[in-house]
Length: 373
Image 1 (tube, rainbow, N blue to C red):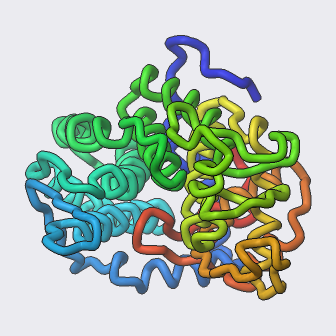
Image 2 (cartoon, rainbow, N blue to C red):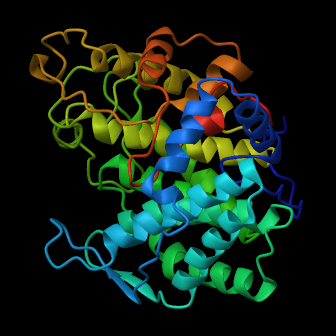
């Protein structure tokens, strides 16, 4: 696979997180009644997001302050984006037109109303919803027979460019790394859907800088790398940024000593970005596969109950990872043939992966043992 998208080369559609080949495999597995895909499909279908009666709740201004007090439209936006993606996947599998209509209805409702995001969590909210919207829109736009009118497609693309892209391309070097990675996940998905080469190239460049700053390998030196532009430019500040960790081993992440939930967000976002780029002929996985493998196994071991050593987070970790590993595991094991034993065991124990109700949804269905390009 080529390492860079040639200037002006067309994007491959659908190609935001899932490709046509992968969607074809999903459909065949479900129709054949194979597991775990059938159960993953049934869980998705029977969720609140899969209902024909699902009703969107758009708002003009999504206001998401820290702590949630005074929030308006935040939960509704995230849930509506997941519902649109769910309905798009249901249409892809079943061909039932009502699902395409429902996905279109949800996306059209938001593109007719949303103007902007406000308050302290605007970037994170935009990232979570924006990444999911792009996946849903990409499937519906290019699914045969979905019938999304061209003027509504243009309106939805305009919403992504004006209400999401300015937020998810901001520079936040001193925030926890899951923010930047989630933002880049949204940016690259929006870039593909809108055929925006400049935004795509910027997201690729940003990814290459972010991942080595977040997931540590011994080759980085005695201490982790400093994020570009960050104020964490001394050993003491860097240790504070890494939640007071002072010893570093292969696979540890910037938020390991915070909790595994946020590390999971970062693992998922890293894989989402690389997977979308992969479908466009850009091998970002090649740049980070060693870090990704180390981080997957490092956190999976402790997530499954291994006792952490005293040096790691004072001997106590908070293992609350979500359904975040399928995409990365699929690439490493099924494309590269690289075993990731602990992560493999954890994923098998927790399948089928559902949704975190933020930006990770139904990835056992779409990516379990599905290396198709």
